[in-house]
Length: 337
Ligand code: TXA
Ligand code: MG
Image (cartoon, rainbow, N blue to C red; front, side):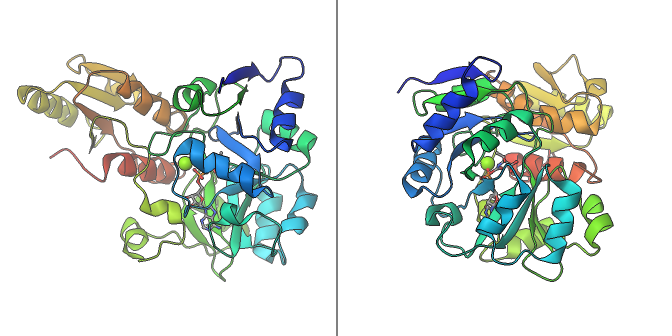
């Protein structure tokens, strides 16, 4: 299958993408977080193509994207008050709300056998225009092959899924760079199942108490509530070792790894660039830039012959929680010692 990449600004780009989706095909499209691989969420066969194209385990449910607030009622039996407050405050935006789904509306393979569905309205003009033209809910995971970093540019989607999907709608680089916050609002105290662009602090200001499990708590659960948590994710080819953002420590680590005959790729803020590193990829200057560049930098490492990736950490305030969650996954929690 030939994969067509179309700029959203090209004539008929939206019409073509919407027509493919309506016909039960999958299409790659941008959101404000990462690129998604979409299919109409009420069409089981179409949704099955997402799992096939990505190589994604079928017990990992998908997020459903909507273009208008009115649609919520079509898929959710009873919208909890706290969910409503979150929608008013953060939609469109990088917040997925897990709620009890109406029966027999959303395709079963979207929810992977659960009773709940994750809904979000993306804050991206291209995504919203597409959704509003299509007027149907779109199930979409990140548009990478399973186990690869999420795509933040159309070319990443192409790298991973060329020949496997008919079309990618190119809307340029996504802004935030890490996936949406997943918030379970089926419990009295809502639980953050995945940290993202809408932070715990921002949520707490609107709905009060929010539970964000520690790494240990998230790993201890036998049946993780966000089934995605149990899969190794975002892993580049070379092993990743985390290190504090401290120039001295980084220099010592590079020397030690190189003394063992290893080529080192360093990922860090621009101010921590080290000449000694065999490769350097910048996270930018600020935490927001770090989120935006994280996956691109991890992907860039895959294009090198580095034997090890040394990645500088950040604190867990604000979007730092999401960054560290993804970095620790990429590293399998391994720190340079
Ligand atoms: O920013 C994003 O959320 C991107 C863009 C494309 O919207 N999408 C994304 O989808 O990251 P994906 O499939 O890579 O991650 C969805 C996460 C998974 O961890 C999944 O387990 C969880 O959301 N999830 C989806 N539905 C769920 C449900 N009903 N209950 C619990 N977790 C759910
Ligand atoms: Mg993903």
